[in-house]
Image 1 (cartoon, rainbow, N blue to C red):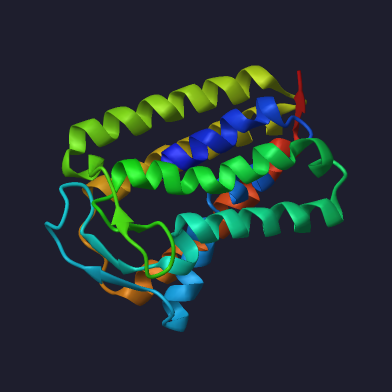
Image 2 (image 1 turned 120 degrees about the vertical axis):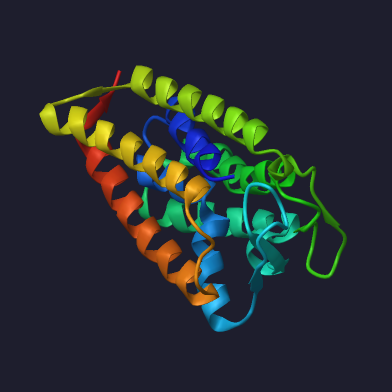
Length: 217
């Protein structure tokens, strides 16, 4: 799951209009924001194994701290607590932000093979949508189109930047998703982590710029 997580972040703007888009994206993607750093630190492991699923060549050997259901609940509470310290908007958006953080596990549970931990050291589950490329693309693309539509209906461009930055953000997400489907397996685990960190920084920065130039309808 990739653009499906961003789809929920876009759609959540309707439920939490005072929360900026990069914060909504960060909540929906918190597990994947933590994961590259834990990979580089050696606390979690992934293996490049082409063919392990039809959609991705990655074998997620161990990621209990970033992706287990229990700890995502904990990370969600901490995320909301930290956001409350810097923004009053969190007072009415706490439930939405917490739900976004935990939604990451739910969406990954649908797509992954049985490698999603319920808690560190506990059982691993997964429905395996990634075993079908067409089904994965259909589900994620539908979610993404709905998320884009909801965000576009909830906000309005204040100026040309608000219009074209939004177009650029959606195009970048779509191109990244397509490239992930057709590209060769990554050369190394370090490359996965570095691309993940840099890519997240670019997307969050562009989402901040976009949202700053759009107002809630």
